[in-house]
Amino acid sequence: MTKKHHHAPPAASPHAEEANRPVAETAPATDSEAAAPAAPPESPAEPQRTPEDVLQDRLLRLQADFENYRKRMDREKKDWIAFAAEKLLLDLLPVLDHFELGLADSAKSGAPAAFTEGFQLVCNQFRAVLEKAGVQAIDAEGAAFDPHLHEAITHLPSDAVPEGHVAAQTRRGYKLGDRLLRAAQVVVSSGPAA
Image (cartoon, rainbow, N blue to C red; front, side, top):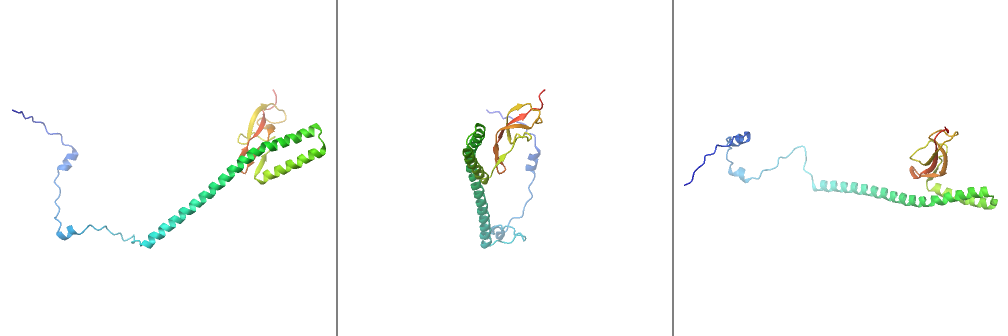
C-alpha cells in the first residue's frame, strides 16, 4: 500500500511560459535542400583574397616586425653602452676630485712651480677627456638650491648669500648629457644670522 501524495504544481515563471508556447511549424525541407550544405553568404564588399595576396600581406608584416626588432636592439645597445660608460665615468670622478684637491693643496703649501704646472696639465687633459665623453661639470656655488642637482650636507647662516642658495660647494657635481651623473655636495645658506 502506497500513498500517493499530490503536490501543487510549481508557480509558472515567465520563462516557463515561453517554453510552453507552441513553436511555429516550419515547412519540411525537400531532398535537394537537405543534401546541399549551407553556403556562407558572400559579401559583395570583400573580394576573395588570392594566395599571392595572403603571402604579400605576411611578407609586409614580417618586414615591419623585423624593422621594429632592429630598432629595439639598436636602442638597447645604446642603453648598454651608456650604462657601461656611466659606470666607468663614476669610477673616474673621484680621481679628478683628488687631482683638484692636490693642486689646491700644492698652491697653499708652496710646492715648486714646475711640479704644480705639470699636475695642472695632467688635470686639464683629464678634464678634456671627460668632456669629450659628454661629462659636464655642475657649478653650484651661488645658484639656487635644486634637489635634483644638489645634495645638501648642511645649512649655515650667511649674510652674503640669500636663503635657499648654495653658500659653498664641497664636492663638484657632474652630468652626462641630460642625466645626472653625480650630485654636487653643497652647503645651503639659511639666510642672515639672527
